[in-house]
Length: 308
Ligand code: PAF
Image (tube, rainbow, N blue to C red; front, side):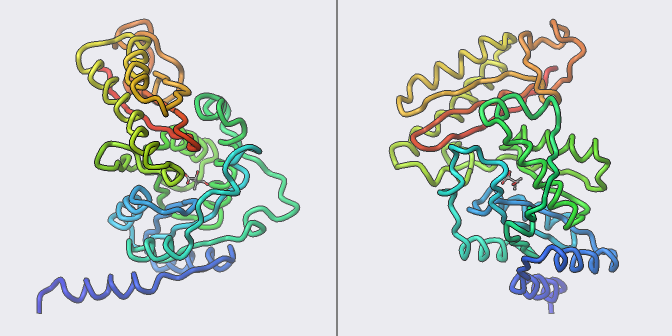
């Protein structure tokens, strides 16, 4: 018998046996038992509507840990009053099947009162990083994100927290929260997963009609134009921004919101991208972040580039 077969069977058995829990106490106890057995635990928080981007997080988490916990919780606190909380997709059965097949050991599906009991009073805000870009367009959004992730981490207490680069600002805010609150968890970022034409995978892509879906590729095409400009030696942030907007003009269903050329570690706007330019003290990594509306969907994407 080949040496790999028993392991394959073990993995298959474990995948088939994904546990689903709602109660925070039972999640805490299950993870604590694994940690007592010296098993390494990774955590992938989601709002469901699972797509390949989430599954790549699970697979990466799986590769570096003995057990993977995922959560599905559509967090009301991170939606503004006129946003899409009510119609956010909730394909629960499909989500469970996909997460189980990708190797999740424990799926936590808290009820709203498990996360926010009626007497809940605490909010977590990462100052400075939460009010710009997405935070300026969606006031209170990142307070909702950091509050819920602090609560989820408090219950799961994993060794690793996995986040996607598609939401680069969210990852930065949460990395900073973990650092500032001395939370004993390592934050890991996974690259953006894209459709074959370059569109970043997102649960909100489900809102797009076929015509809108075809034009949503404008976000990535704009970023590709920014990357080409940077590779060609362009070092003016304003001209990089103009390169993105010039692409967007070819897509009439796309209503651009912002193109931001910022320091990837601080989100401070940059003007001169030369290494020794007018921001010599700033970090080497530059983030080009974009947001646009395409029909009913508000989409974001980004590109990281290193100054040499
Ligand atoms: O990225 C998301 O899906 C959410 O913002 C998160 C991190 C699960 C918190 O609700």
